[in-house]
Figure 1 (tube, protein in one colour):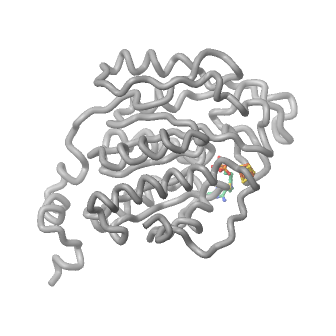
Figure 2: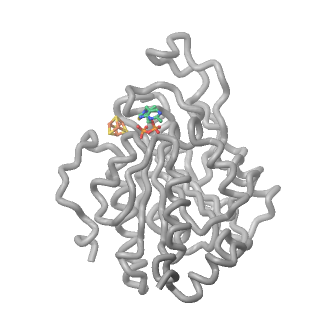
Amino acid sequence: MKENLRTKNAITWCPSCPNNMILESTKRALTNLIKQGRKKENFAIATGIGCHGKIFDYLNVSGFYGLHGRVLPTALGIKLGNPNLTVLGFAGDGDTYSEGIGHFISMGRYNPNITLIVHDNQSFSLTTGQATPTSQQGYKTKSEPLGEFNLPLNPIKLAISSGATFVARCNARDINHTSKIIEQAIKHKGFSFVEILQDCIIFNLKINNKDKLMYKIPTKNRKIKEALSLADEWDYNLRKGKIPLGIFYQEKRKTLEEKWPQLSYLQKKKISWKDLKK
Ligand SMILES: Cc1ncc(C[n+]2csc(CCOP(=O)(O)OP(=O)(O)O)c2C)c(N)n1
Ligand code: SF4
């Protein structure tokens, strides 16, 4: 079954880039969901531009190779076009937390039933390693020769406070855990956000190999305050604090499709806009 998700395209990520592991985790999650009854043709993906975006070429699923910073509007467009599709967005940290930040914040309010997977390598890697909003303070690059001045953004805190209804973090290298979290995120009804910590083996090397600081949190219902305080345990700076992994927060709330009568109608009838015209 997993073979069906493979394409014939040659993989051009650097050898041993953890993007390969994110691809494997995604394949495992989708394979499980297909075994549980979802149809492969009902998955659709949207990607940004960056090293992460190449996942589009290696995953045999329909979709749209979008623009840098515009993964979420693309994914949302696909969902509005056919609310019966299972829509996933793959984005970079530069992509999501810099140019795409407005879309990221709005998604919690809209709560569409889509999943965003962020490959967070704390670097704009495809464009040779400039600092992104999650890079550590002091990170020196060709465009920040004196080191990044600003404090990093904490995407987990931002997602929880902007209303995302499923917020999780994983380690790209832990394929078993990551694939299970991706599967749960896809099953969640509403906007689900999975932040995957991913080393880049070419740029921002100082933040690599954080595995020893990572630990898994139990899956349980948490109040927002408790989830935020867990998120605060690591500030995305260098080697400070323990790094919690797992589902920080999950909440049931009406989805965009449930709030929008035309979309609920299409979902109830299991049809698309095209069928409606007939
Ligand atoms: C609209 C637009 N803005 C900027 C760029 C330039 N650009 C392409 S890839 C990229 C960096 C990608 O970084 P990130 O999203 O973190 O992904 P990574 O390469 O690290 O996986 C940038 C800035 C672009 N192609 N299009
Ligand atoms: S530059 Fe970094 S993120 Fe891009 S493929 Fe190479 S290791 Fe992976």
